[in-house]
Amino acid sequence: MMQWLVFALMTVAAVFAVLWPLRQRDNRAQADGSETAVYRDQLMEVDRDVAIGLIGPPEAAAARVEISRRLLAAADIQRAAPLGSSLRLRRVTALVALIGVPIIALGLYLPLGSPGLPDFPLAQRASATDATRSLDTLVAQVEQHLENNPTDGRGWSVLAPVLARLGRTDEAIRAFRNSITYNGESSDRRADLGEALVAGAGGVVTGEAKGEFERAVALNAGEVKASYYLGLAAEQDGRSADAASIWRGMLAQAPANAPWRPLVQAALIRVGGSPVPALSDDAVAAAKDMNETDRSAMIRSMVERLATRLKQNGEDVEGWLRLVRAYMVMGDGGKAKDASSDARRAVGDNPERLRQLNEGLKNLGLDG
Image 1 (cartoon, helix red, strand yellow):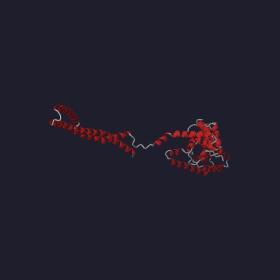
Image 2: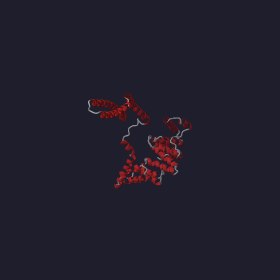
Image 3: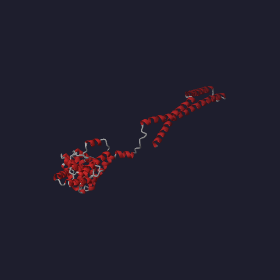
Image 4: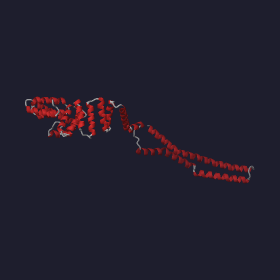
């Protein structure tokens, strides 16, 4: 609303600037008309002065010449701007100024301007342009504080992840080390340090980084970040089976809505593992045309049929392993453990099948 008010005031100012000279010209024309009448009166007054003897004939002749000269000049000006045409011109000009100027201005502004653009206050613009600068300033302030207080563990724990996100890897590694030194050892701090070391090595899990991840898992067996990178280390060493075993174990213990599940599932596929139970060719062809909900329902139905069949005939070791793996991928660790127990009871009287089952369960990350 304020924007259009400003435009209206600007239009009024433009119209006033156009009409003001015309008004001045009109006043001047009126002044010229009255001036001719004055000169005529002066000529008549000279004749009266001669008649009563106030001035002589020579002086009267000179006065008439001068007054006549001025009268002719005023008459010429008046004839050059007749009142009727001047009035019509002023009216046309005023009409153009009042209507034409706003229409022309609006016609140019709508295609060339941005009337729908929202306000962008100065404070917001300053905030947007100075966001990175503000973060750098804060980091500099924390660094200055830590120079004066190098044993402030909380300061190092705050600074380290920020440096990592800014790509200042070497400084982040130092900060993570100081955080461990002054805050004490924990699984997440060890895992964060290991991740920074991997970033510093261009994505390679070095021996030093692997050592940090192993310390993190020793402190907390459920440390997700450390477990993932240990699987990545196995993959980079060429031990795909070990990597798949680690990642399957993570999926078995993870809740169904864990945000990192897709990452681990993709890694599992990369090393040759299957994120879903093996399906027949016909089932695979049918699943291509299904949405995600229907596909998941079909897989669960197949898993239930497999579980029912194994309860009737429990000698199929490969079937038991497929069932356990399916439960793990589906995020149902409890059912995976129950199925492994049922499988051991089913093949317990056959030492060879029990050995195959135990080896398979171990590869899936279920040793007990």
